[in-house]
Length: 488
Image (cartoon, rainbow, N blue to C red; front, side):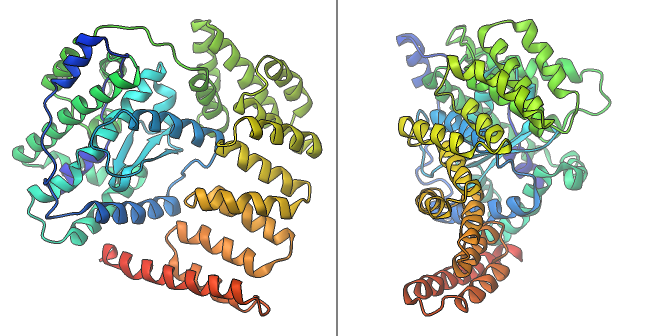
């Protein structure tokens, strides 16, 4: 019974995305009834414990699932997610959004504001409102503390025992090829009262998500439209997609979503160019389906709007670059950059092309200018650090990456590049220390501590560096001890 609840709470729930409300629409949103969660689940799990558990499970996912570490895709999904979070109520944790390479249609949220979206789901959405509807619903699960409340309802005295079981379910959701069958069989045998509990939480997340999406300015009908699309696609299948196996959708819930959406009216909300470019990049560089790019660009041709036409050109440049035909790729991309010189997607791809063609100085100049215009762009910072490394400017890369990893200490890209930069400087202690951070983010604390101990032997009398390494060893040892309880 326990697995039924958690699987459905973590798994994707299709919902609505919304428009900016008129006065009467805002009133409708304010009338959506939500529970008072001020003290709900507090006796079972504190916010601090939720964040700790979220940190632990994210490390597990990094080590065992294909999390996409593409800087521009990561920036896009986090910008979209945080736009929604900024409009959400009852936010008590920071949020992090991830894309996972998977041909299975799914998404899930878990402790600590972590939301994971499968790449196939993004590709299957028809517009940005549908994608935003998925994220908003998962945000609703987190802000309403559904996992903590599930623990409360089951009278779990120890969150660590409960959490250890959650870990195996979470990994199965993330990697359906390994564990989905076991979850599905558990769902079939669940008691009716647990099913009802799950449906209540899903409907609550629908309402919370809808309110968030109205404030964020998306189409409120996108959720039911995407659900209808899924139903149409799977009507004659012998086995529904995993999203419907782990996320039951009774008629009452779908009807409720449609009725709530109608209160806000219908509004056409065009998808951003970034949305079209993200799907093109996923189709060419991430999807395992070799026909995905062809099918996507055929759909773009049918849409025939400015954004879709631009994305086809960008996708063509991606494909040429992916086939090492960089001169053709550069010729195509130059057209886009002339019209939109500040576009991060184009700058990122042109950087890759220039580095392959040994035009590192040109790439660096372009990136430095772009970063002055957009200093908060994580994608541009990582691109510039990588270009510095390719040009042998290791110290400049180290300076940039020290700031980056301080502000984005959970991004493995930054630590990977810092490892390479220190390797170029032949600074072995710092190189091993940066590498230890990568390993720690994947949950292997023993190996990380071993690397740091080896780094101690390379400090060559540098007392400040030695002190930092010793402090980090102590911190990781404490984390290892705290996280051990989730392995029981």
